[in-house]
Image (cartoon, rainbow, N blue to C red):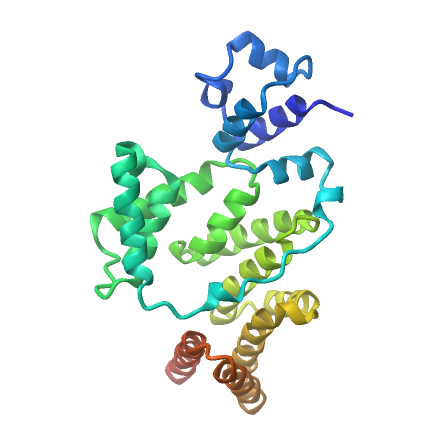
Length: 295
């Protein structure tokens, strides 16, 4: 089997990174070349730093190294953490605290990808909802630039797009990026959080596809989500699927069938105290209703 250095080289080249960007301060030029040829191994501590610069995890390295085939450590799928959907009124405040703490620890943090994402979320979830500030627009531009500059996406880029998909306004570009993400994500079927990651990606973009009337693609996404949410541990995602499929029926002049599914989703949310999801459902329905009224 190939050495890990050979796999690292493939990932580095696919992402468009130079050797200097990945190995500067870690390995000499000659050693990094030999490492990528498979002549030598490197210390685990150095490997961790290399992976950090490549923006992938040890787990993802193992998957790619094994051509996305199942490995012993990837046999058990992680259950969905339902707390991710908990209604948290202090969400924006928590983000602000994290930003302030990170800035104190590292003055260069303002140039990090994580910082840009936090800025976007802070702007959206704050009471002021300021998406016109210079900081927000700069963060938006940096995230878009980062994704466009990557020649090949790994999990870090897929998850970034999944979380920040709303930053892309052009329908054709956004659809293309979504399809790229979906195709790339399917390769990670043996990742322990595969079902969560791909369900998040698909549900996050399904409303956009419905709103832009890309119904052939909507049907493909709905079909895949039913496959993914067949297990009881994926019930939260199934609720989102009921809601989004209901919107699809409503948008395609099957209002009664659509409202039945939407009300079913709302009822489950009430029984499980997920008031924030009910708000999302009502907002989404209002948007589709207004669009149909205008048209």
